[in-house]
Image 1 (cartoon, protein in one colour):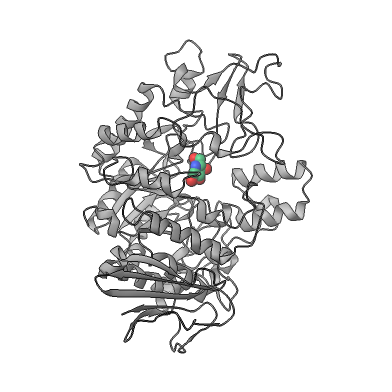
Image 2: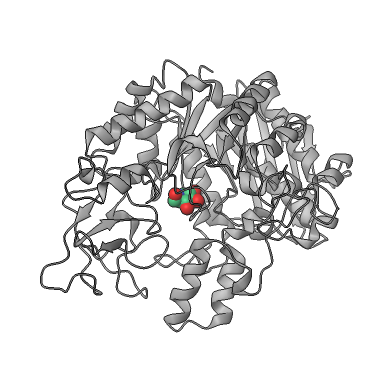
Length: 561
Ligand code: NOJ
C-alpha cells in the first residue's frame, strides 16, 4: 500500500483533558510527553492533536488567535518540538488540527478587518444589514442563517454598521476563502508547520470553506426560532475542490506524503469518493457524520433523540465500505471530542456489560477497511459524564442549546436528558489514569470534574488486566498491522436485517475473515445460513469459552479461514 496512513491507527488527544503536568487543572504538552508509554503500548501509529494554538478558548482552542504559537495554557513551542521528536523517536507521527474556516475574533487579521478601510476587510464576510430593518435589531441580519452554536450566524458591529458571519460562536468569524490572500496565508502557515516536523493535518469543518455566493436566505428549520440551521445551505460550495487542490499543490501534500483528513458536515459517500480518489489531489480521507446521526430525529437537532436501530447502522457503514472499495479511503471512528462515549451510546455501560460491549464495539469498527481512530479514553472504556444539572456543563454548544431550548418552552428534564446523552462534555471529562483523587490527570482542580467511576475505570487498572478493553484494543491494532486481510480485504455485510447481530466478512486472495458480533444484551443464535469458514481460527474474542452456534450478550468473535 503506497500511502503509509492506510495501514495506520490514529489516536486523538484532546490536550485540555489528557494529562496535566503542572497542576493548573488543564492538560498540557508536557503531560502528553509523560504519557507516551501508554500510546506505545497500545501500538498506535499517529497522534492527532486537537488545537494547542494561542486562543481565547471560547471553543476550547477551536478559536485561534495565533496559528504559529502555542497557548501558554498548554506550554511552549519548544515543548511541542520536544513532543514531535519524542513521537518520531518512537516511530509515531504527529497530525495537527487545522482550523481555517474561521479564526478567533482576537486574531490580528480579524482585528484589522474591523476597520472598513483596512486591506483585510475582505478577509472575512462583512455584509450590510437587511434592507428596511433597523440595523442591530432582530431580523436585520444579512441572511437568516443560524449558527451551529445556536442563534443568528451574524454579529452586528455598531462601529461600522455592518455584520460579520460566524457559523460557530460569535468569537469565531468565518474567513473569506474567495480572497486569494487568505488562502496564501493559510498555505504559508501549513508549510511552516510541515517544515517544523508535523506529518499532516486534520482539517476542521473543511467543507464550509467555499460559500455559495451571493450569501442568501435558506429554508427556516423547524422549531428553532425561524432561522435556517440546514447545513446544506453552506456546505460543499462550488470552489471547495479547487481550494483543496490548490492547497495540496501549495503545501506539497502529495510529494511530502502528508496525512490529511477533512471533517465534513453533510458529506455523503459520493462526495467522499470524489474528494479522496487517489488522483484527486484533495484529501486522504474524510470524517463523515452519517453514522453518528442515526440516533437523532431526522431534520431536528442532535439533542432530539431516537433509539438506534442496528440495521440502519450496519447499512450505513456497509454503504461506505462498498462505496469506497475501489476508489477513495474510509476513516473509521466512534468517538472524538464532539461525540458522546461509544460504550454509553451504542453499548451498555452498566457494570455487567461495560467491558464486553466496549470490546465488541471496538471489534466491529477496527476490522472494517479504512483508517481507525481511537479517541483518548475509548481504549479503556470510559463512559459518559452522567451530568444531571446545567451548571455542570462547560461546553458552549451545550450551554447555548439549553438556553435556546428552554426559552422555546421545551421541558427542562427533556433538555437535560438530551444533553446527558449527547453533550460534547461527555467526551471531555479528564482521562482516567489511575484511582487517585485527581484520577492521575491533575494534582490540582480539573477544569471539568473527573468522573467518579475513575476509581474502577482507569488506565492503570486496564493495563494491568489482560482481559481489559485496553488489551483488546491493543490486539485489534496488532491484527491490522499483522494481517493484510484487515487492511485490504473486501467487505461484505451478512444478515443486514438482523436487529442484534452485526456480522461481516473481509476477503482477500481466497481467505476470509469473519466478524460476528452480538450488539445486544440478549444471547443470539448464529443464523444457520451464516457460513463460518471450515477450520477457521479464532483470532480474537470477548469470551474465554465461546459456545458453538450462540453468541452471549455483547459477545464478539473474529475468525480467519
Ligand atoms: C468542529 C470541531 O470538531 C468542534 O469541536 C468545533 O467546535 C467546531 N468544528 C468549530 O471549530
